[in-house]
Figure 1 (cartoon, rainbow, N blue to C red):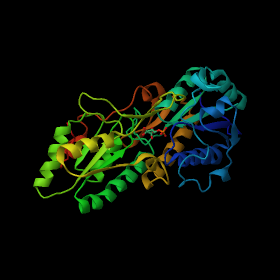
Figure 2: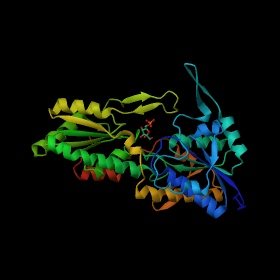
Figure 3: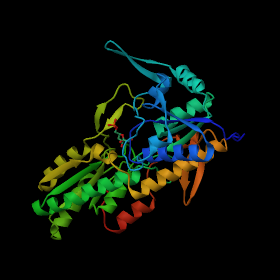
Length: 367
Ligand code: F6P
């Protein structure tokens, strides 16, 4: 049933998981449309699901969202660790997990909201789906620099992160050229290669390594040597943090025990660098783009896209399309059931046009 009354309906917004450019643009769009067109009251849940469990929230007034369109991060705070269904609690030196979902649901019920808008990646939206199954009216908005959410062509934050990674690749070109070195740029993306592939193509990487194509070190070394023979005494390698060699494994940088997805990737670029230097004899350096990719102001694309997503999310609230996420398919905004959106990471298909494009311009994909 559609939300009928225009008088003081309340909605809540929550931002969960890793931050990225564009979150504030969504918060702004949801808040402005909800207030301007429907006279709704908007509540911001603080620090992701922590705020639901610990009952921490505040009203977001129209004036609170003025000037946040271009702001990085999230004005509401976020958490990559809090999951109401498996809530991490340290008791002295012991880490224990408890089901705190009843507290989270009570918080929502006490707030008397008609909908909780969850802005997040697969982890956050997966929890949102469970809350929906437990009776909470949810609308999801897909957010991640990894672009790995199913049911949408793209997530907001991806374009900004890819632009930052591209700038990083651009900047290592001149130093690679001057020193006749191999420069390796490691980018984020979790277990998907969208960020590496897209920024690698945009930055003219000679070799792009993604998790979907386990790499053969000899093939990469061969490409570098071939370039030398042709007089190109430098090579740029773009590698995804989730990449792995053929028959080998991913590189884990750290484990975050409290997190639902505890593995933090990182370091494959250094391993590749050592191997390449040994095989080719050419001096090699590795740069890790890391959290630079998540910081700062969103690109033009992400500002417009995030604003559209926020506006569409309010349309979905008004039409009571709960249990869905707003996604983009071609030129249309679509509603994607949350269970579909969170049915595992969206990987780069091996027949994807970006893979074909990279190969067509002579880029080595390592396998
Ligand atoms: O999902 C976004 C992301 O930035 C991944 O690309 C990366 O693997 C991970 O989060 C890093 O997590 P953290 O912020 O906990 O270091």
